[in-house]
Length: 225
Image 1: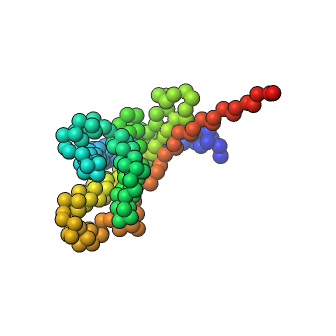
Image 2: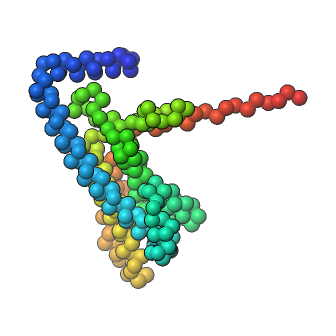
Image 3: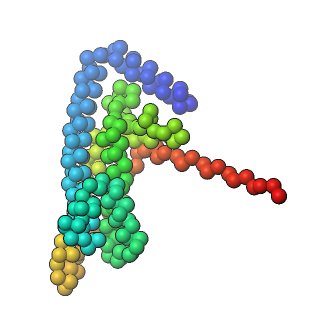
């Protein structure tokens, strides 16, 4: 079955469901909407918590006084802060024992892409079926030369994001606490914090998107001699 035929089948199925039981389908969609928006509100709130902790991390990692950090980075979005942190690490590679921070920032980058899509482009049931993940896309607003980006999202996926965000927050906070301790006490503290920074940690949120494709670069034609 082609993609077009699959879309037609889904629309037909939606119409048949509504024709059989309109009140039941409306009630089912309303319930799913309420569950989704409850999860979305919690996700947005916890994301803001992590964003604040990321700012505090930048202040300490870049060795900036608080006033300077507020002037320089106070207006940065999460994406800007992530790029800055990664630039710091390229300039001065973090020690091996800080791999738990790189792992956390990488997962935050993934979640931030989803968050940006939800905040700027919202989401909706694509075929009126609350059993299917919702669709968030910039289709219709992206530049004509670029491919639209699509994210699939559900209440369960947002709950997974919240779980990961709390882990990211804990890791950033762990770093803050460690750096505030005398050097002789840091190793013992990190041993006690090993449960939240273990290298085999499995993140719950996985990518459910179609990233924009980069347009191919035009081939240069060699001039004839």
